[in-house]
Amino acid sequence: MSDDSITEVVFVGLPGPTHHYGGLSADNKASTLNRGSVSNPKLAALQALELVRLLKSLGVVAGILPPQLRPHMPLLRQHFSGEDEAVIAQAAVSAPALLDKASAASSMWTANAATVTPSIDSSDGNMHITAANLFTNLHRRIEAEDTYHMLKSIFEDIPDTVVHPPLSAVMGLLDEGAANHMRLCPSHSQAGLNLFVYGATDITNDKTAGRQTLSASQAIARQHKLFDGAAGFIRQNREAIHSGVFHNDVIAVSNENLLMVHEQAYDQGMRDIERIAKSYRETHQGKELSVVVISEEELTMEEAVQCYLFNSQIVTKPDGSMAVIAPIEVKLLFDGEAAEMMEHIRADSSNPISEVRYVDLRQSMRNGGGPACLRLRVPMNTPQLAALTQRKRVIADEELITALERIIHAYYPDELIPSDLGKPSLYHASHHVMEALSEVMQLPLVRSGG
Ligand code: SUG
Image 1 (cartoon, rainbow, N blue to C red):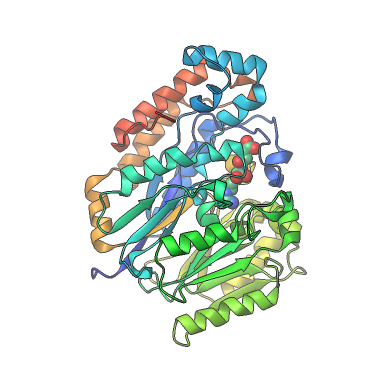
Image 2: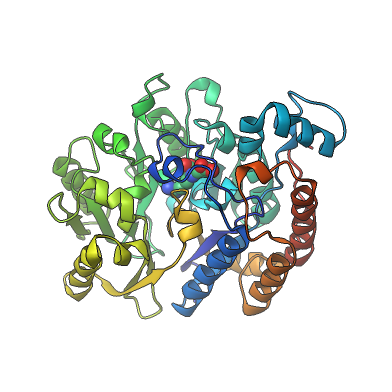
């Protein structure tokens, strides 16, 4: 492998022991639909590790990002005081909705942790990582600071790497990270066309305007010093947002030179998709983007939101062909029609997809988090990956996976409803989990706010 070759490391977020269904995201159909139902944090975490194993079996380098400590005490301490347990007990009685938000295990959806661009895309030769501010929803906003500290502790001393703090939402910069970013390139090792997808140009009170502003996407493109022409900006279709497309990765997915997208994903429909293909051609000297467009007739927007077909991960296997990792719902819903459609796409030799694998992530899916939500892609060059592997214990090998499974079996509850969130046993279990993870992964224990 030459120094210039880039390996995409796929970081999967480990669900934390407070994983529950709070109905906390009004624009996310699965979240609102499953509000209050019984969750199984143990199973959620084990399902995420099965995803890691699948990625590894496909030849992908996979990493793990640990959960954050919950409940988020600084949020509760704005209302209550005393020892942690007393604060939680008061919140459980007087402000259960607040405790619900403070206990969200939502940092598992690492596609929202940050936006990442590799050294090869920037004029300063650095890999840039900007922690997302996740400002739209309170239960997610509280992730931002700890995510930044976690990413810093993992990546800061990696060569040619800059980790940026979350953007200031006070300036109208609403940012949900990689879920609204696609990097298109002939291969990971070549410079990419970075597409940023946004809902509104600036902050607005309109709830249907989405969670990402153009101003934030532009700030990131500038901050990352992307080469001229290496950034493009595409507006989401309002109707799609209204139908439950709260992030771009609910309706489009890309990998290298492949884009799979619903025809109604963007404001200008097919015109936008053609514009993307044209920009790709211009950036990559006449090379063609392989575009798989799924029409409304083949799969309605509503069906796409239900089965999360576009929230698949697409990865490049060592032989250069691509595998789709799709949620099991694609097979289970609509009498398997969406899976049949996927089979046609796989069999079509005009695109690079050679394999479709289905994963059971139902614990996360019930909160609107599919395979693509659970992963942060970090394209690293050879010295960067070597430094990461040497200095940190985040790359998943079987030994790490087994150690994590042991922690999960020891401390995670296998049943949780929102009214359990005030229980001292959960608070103690959460602390044990974080301490054990910090030891096994050799990471500092990031304590919210202090
Ligand atoms: O932000 N769900 C998350 C799902 C995030 C999915 N990520 C991507 N599409 N990349 C969200 O809406 C629900 C939590 C609850 O209701 O308990 C939640 O936060």
